[in-house]
Image (cartoon, rainbow, N blue to C red):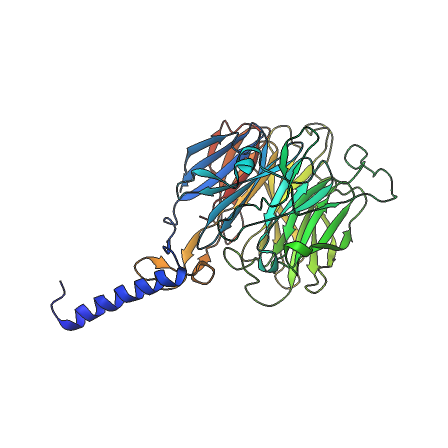
Length: 458
């Protein structure tokens, strides 16, 4: 109990500071995240479902919620947005025409639709067919959502309300059947130009935009075009309303660029680079089954290749033939560890069990070297992610913080969540942060046509 004036003064001062924090935010300040030992994971599948999972280390994996057809018929990708005011999830519906849905989420992973009644029912158009990836901008592009429409070979820009994270509904048109449709702000159509059909005819008869990725500083967006063997560069320095194509990166013919990951990462939960210095990018080329390292020019966005593309399999491992799918061995997802020492790639094509390939990364020049591959626990690991543990990085008042960007930090990634499309399961692997090695610690079946597994930062 407080038995002297000094103690009472201290208590009053603490209360005053707490009230000051609340006044600064203009609303209730954000409660610190749940304990670091718990992880919430979201999965999507082509059955129309979004599943919410709880992973409690070392090995307990349980399903918490199931959301069916709230995000169209074929949710294929989720994007998380975390601010002082909002916890928002954006979901791409890989349909024709393509759509994006927005949701607010509770601390236990429940989803609540955001937007106008028209958007809640029909979503927001992506300006193309088959959206397979979406990403929210940062820095100058922080109020933009970028979408890659695979089947149409297009990329689109949607605008986000900073108030609640909902998508703008200002551009409404009427389609040929008389239905109202909320349209994107801008759509970019990519082509193979005058080059005709590419070396892999059934995958390269036209542009296929497979991913959109924002640079760490938010000034550029990169569109991996599997069909055209190009990485298109969009400039975002003046915000959502003036995005424009500013260049392209040419990759080897027939290589099929699929996914791209940058290092170093941006500051926790958005913002610019953590420190000054060089920026690197790592590309999985699906059809060539390779990983390629690049250095970025921060002024122009240009990517310059480092060394040669590296196969994502052990030396001498067959790329086709007995025990391998007719599509051959192919790469899919790519991620770089926060410390920059390892690059991980999902490897597909094995008829028994696929793999996660581990590359060591030279922190001085950004080059990579294949180390090993490890069984992934299923077939067709279409997507995986490294765990995100968010902790307060500085003192707080009564468990409250007012500025997530400066007062939170992300811990080293200790786990990997993998979505196996053919096997229909979710696998959790423990990551040795010193050696980079992976070990399966949990598995859940019944994730029909799993295509995405993402650790929630909330």
